Image (cartoon, rainbow, N blue to C red; front, side):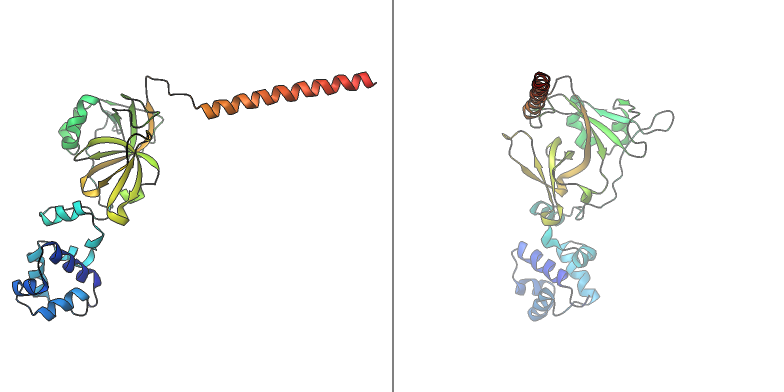
Length: 276
């Protein structure tokens, strides 16, 4: 552990968040103030017995104190740790997904309708809850991946309209989230949201969630608040999306240009015949 600057930065951060001085912390742990200062700046290291006492004092495992840089965590994540909870500090944790299969042992696509949205954030990991959701098959989807379809509410993500059904592919490793791509994000506080996501896990332990409707401001979701993430695959809507005017105008311009070229060619051919 010699020269472990991560450990030093961690205990300095935790001490400061408790509002304790180095002197007060040293007294509480029965060590010299100079020794504690050395632990914080990385010039000294505690023995195993003291390391265990420090772990108990801050109510954090020695593994987290030694191996994880707590200064990179968000305020929300630190709060969860200090209250005795656990957070995924890397986005790589193996996630166990409750799922269902059909009579042929093929993965179903479960349907989460509007009326089931409120309970999904609590029942998402409960096999009994997932088993009562409607299911169906989409033969054009990959057989080796997991999909789920959610009914979306609101007008924050045009051209996906209110009431549309959005299908997502389950994301196991959140570090693989690609900036600027649409995802279905299930959170403890906001439930199911469909947003364009920017990956800020390494910077501050959050995901930046953005709408395609500019009236809705972007906001950050702390990783400790996130339950599931599904990558957008497609959506089904009973409403016809608004036409892309710029693309339509371009098509009309091409058609007009072709007409002009045809008329010019005919004119040149007529002039050629008259010259003969």
